[in-house]
Length: 116
Image (tube, rainbow, N blue to C red):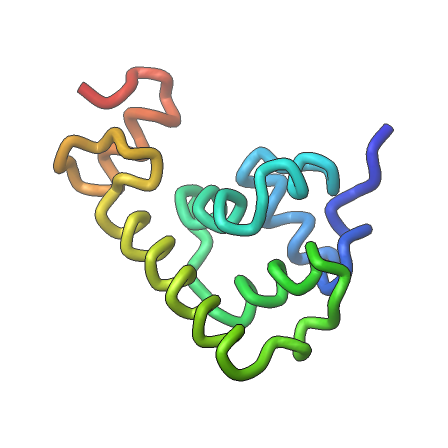
């Protein structure tokens, strides 16, 4: 059995719950998906965007404390975060919305209907 999501530094019980809602149940799954993919999945499952949460995740996957992110590194992470959020808002976090509203595209994907 794999370690829980909370085995990753900076991630506690609230993170475990949020990732479980997004279908991520183990630390290995989270590492495999990576910070950007995992955060996109959180947004797709209704999590509100929060920059500190994103960079705490990135730092945790690197084994670093959440507040270790500073300067140019933090600026680069902010650009990544903004790009992830923009894709989620546009409904093309997986490149398949074809211009549909994000909520409708997500509903179609989640129910197995698929995006036309």
